[in-house]
Image (cartoon, rainbow, N blue to C red):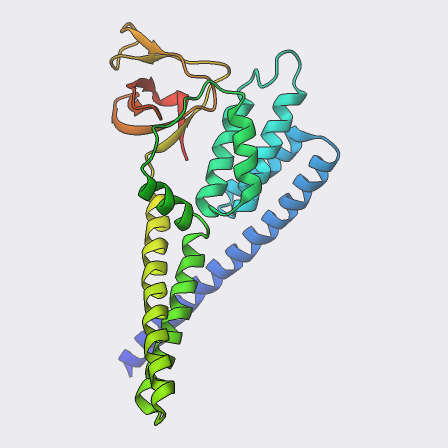
Length: 272
């Protein structure tokens, strides 16, 4: 009898925890939806600082999506153009590029984010990346057509088709139908296989935390070693994209798109 009571208590506790989590998630979602509407209204009224604050709050609530990051990038871009004096003098271009890249990590097929990213990069002193080989370029272009979730769904759909065609091949008495089912099943299986590979590839890109963006007001210094008195080898502007190689105290060794390496303070970069 006591064991039944213990099981009942455990189940009650589990349900209570689940209920609390559900209520918190619902409250968080409702708050995010209210902030989203506030951001849209502020953006429409050209109140870009208010739009930034509302969208950043959504990110803090862990309710961010590709659309949230995309619109946050737009808000930062407009805010930088709206500022007094030189455009983007307070580092808004870096924040805009950071959020465009975050949007593209979640949805590589978002053409608007890709287009706006290219426009924003024109305001930086970013360098051209090293050219990719033909195969690598084709692979990147093809896998970037959809997000990892999109490729995963595609993989499942074509795998189910493969199983259905396999059943047709095994159960049908018509030779012509069996031949068609056999060869089409091979094709759908190949599509399913490559969709799985593309899904894993996009997931790996999403989980790769090495990509970062330089965040500063105008420009910052990159040193030859993790020491502020060492030689300055480069002065990237806000918004330049880099890859983090390793960290040492308050410094990180980074690599630019053209392959040059150097050290930068952690406060001047933010991971995508």
